[in-house]
Length: 149
Length: 382
Image 1: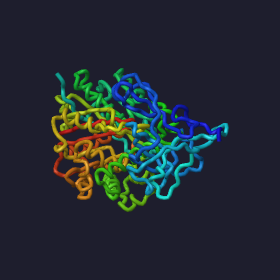
Image 2 (image 1 turned 90 degrees about the vertical axis):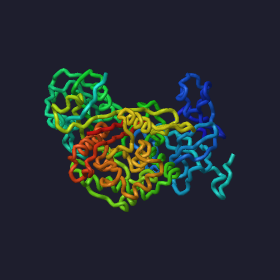
Image 3 (image 1 turned 45 degrees about the horizontal axis):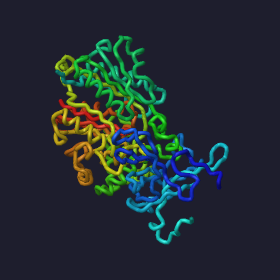
Image 4 (image 1 turned 45 degrees about the vertical axis):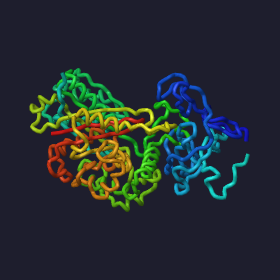
């Protein structure tokens, strides 16, 4: 399992039992961004501090991608539709993410979501690549088990 | 002191798929048609702005049009490329720098969705690798939330697309000229929930050129000038929800569409209520619905009733996308914004044939929107 590498460096804490997205917050006006960036899109100050974002939020909007995207998409050769959504985090930012759920009828704006790191694909040397995703939080799915520690 | 601007010549190469005809050939066709419409020759053109994404550099058209030494500036501004060329041409004449010029847009895209490169937009490559660099997702997520907030139904999404193909069937220059029923639209393949295949426009081919001049000299070239009352371009502000955004602010700001439309109406000195016919960006049917309200043509949530009542049909009280819009014409990026102006000029001249808006319209409005959050609007009047 330790061979799994993140899709890109600097997006989320990894390896970690409780991975978090890595954003940044403006020291001047408090605006939070994901991913981290060097200056503030709101007040223009070049004074951003790195910040681990909260792991749970609510679904702001969503769709299901129904066709295989063109380059540089790296997903599995045999295309399978996947959910994409925006999740509002308590940090005052809404992040875009792949969703683990691909049935639009199982997704509702406002439902609680939680961050997970999931297998995505394998790269050229054959290493397993993992990426961040959001899934409906355990509390939102009747009968679902708590995520294992 | 500024001068007013008029459009005195229009030219178009039909939109669609044209195997064996290069984008440059289509552009030349459009420019020559526009020159002929205005009754001028290429040597009379004092400046030009032009743009294309996949069709080549606009300024190299001079090797065929004539090496007259004119300043010819290439414009690249995503889906607002045509609108940006026009906006810049407008300012050039308004400033008094030149009296007569050309704006041209053309393109020829391969089949399928655009393959946008995240890194050219300052986004990490991972964003495309993981499958989020896809415009269709943005429009789907924007309309998904909008439907919930403003009570728009999926039936209305299908109605908008059916109208587009119906209008396209009346337009000899359109790509999609076969009417499709609301049921056919709704039953087509799901592309990005809740939007189906026929609710989306496709990248395509085509070219449009316009000849613009000082309004006080317009009647030298035509007895039916159309006045470019305003042309405005805006980019996104902090807090607006735009395409290709890995994260958003929680606070919401007006979109660049709201800003550009407001600026255009302000410059023109009229309001959205004065518009007789509108061409607005319908990348997918939800976009037409949302942009109707963002441009000020109606209130948010009013679209459901307006569209069901047929108000946006050619014979309705607020005709929208009379030429079939992007849905029926496809989207050759460089040409798309200028197509809207071309259609507006036809409507104001009374030359729109089977799709002519009745009642001799006097005021037209156009709106384009594109990545990564830009909009260009014009107000035209005869």
